[in-house]
Image 1 (cartoon, rainbow, N blue to C red):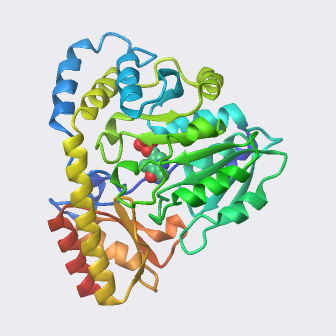
Image 2 (spheres, rainbow, N blue to C red):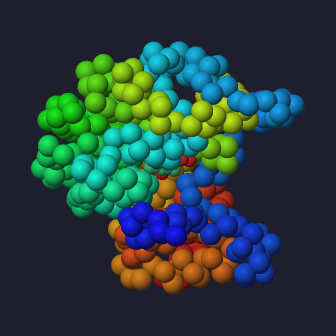
Length: 359
Ligand SMILES: *Cc1c(COP(=O)(O)O)cnc(C)c1O
């Protein structure tokens, strides 16, 4: 059987090592996983109650339109209900966008290194990929503009960028949007939005009124701590959302995910406290980097990319053997770096102490 030739060059997504596998492989009981930017504080107890309540309803299909969640979120964000599209994680919104807009005659522009799913889904659609190297960890928006031509359909801006943590500020974003042709969709992936504290981080939602070619992606997987339930969303202009909706599966978000997300929105105190603790955790890593004279990018996400100026794979391996799973930079395009998810104060201290003994 022959599959589409473009699939032959793709590897399935390589996730952070699963906890059970590490336990078995190294004979450990206690594992700290700081590899996939999951929330070390879990998720809101309100979401937990909602999940338990929903368990009695599992024989019924979910509401394919996510009506209740849509209403709550549209009120919270002050956008029209029809400006929202829900996905089985924001990963699925990336897939829907690629499926709807890309084909073998089109190209798509993105930074590199950035979140791998843009490229992955664009390859499946057989589109030409135009990757523009980051400059100092940041999107090189001028070079990205220069890469756009009449065949460009989608431009991806990941902000804060995974894996560097850098962001595109309000004025740079606006002058970029001003220059992108209206026929090109700009996807603004704000998966880490809830963690951001920078004052010049874009207030992106009002931009949707000026630029009909923008779609913002957000998720319940990161700060909301619901990664297992797979629910994220896109916000765009009504006509764009309406055009891509047919590429969405009818029951793509589960009952449990919808109920949990709805309840999680009611607990903004939880998000606030995660944001504060995350900021403090980042400071622990900054202090460590400065003490050890290691290069890093200041991060607006819940992760930090640290450059050890040597093959970081052995550090990754040594941490793994002690039960600390982080992400080796090799797979992320930064072979001398590790990407570490900001954990609890204690977890951060443990990792930092271990790294100090290894350096
Ligand atoms: C984690 C992540 C996502 C995907 O999250 P979902 O769990 O699919 O919602 C999207 N974009 C970036 C940049 C991410 O880091």
